[in-house]
Length: 126
Image 1 (cartoon, rainbow, N blue to C red):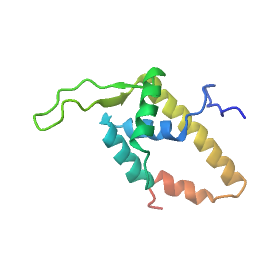
Image 2 (cartoon, one colour):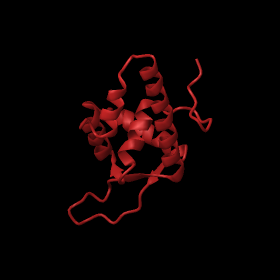
Image 3 (spheres, one colour):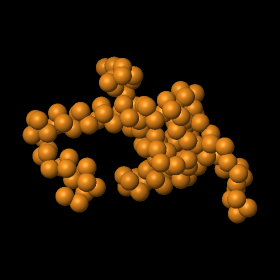
């Protein structure tokens, strides 16, 4: 079975790739920071090896890049920080639209109630 496509025709992201892009959407992060962000959001995170294989692939694909930085005196200067590229942000946006469409289909098919979406949209406060 072929990988699903986003609304712009690109192949859908793997769940790990999408999680990494979400982790980098608001700030550059180093590998451990990416893992912690994913763990905090989902209750579990990727192994270090899986993360760095995905990061390497995503760099080659142009979805993220190493962020230039000046380490603070108390930081490890060897630590690499990553940030989204313009293509990475667009890929995350397209994947979000693809997933939202699937959730809308699930609502139409009565697999979940529409109130679940409102709860997600308002941060779980409704």
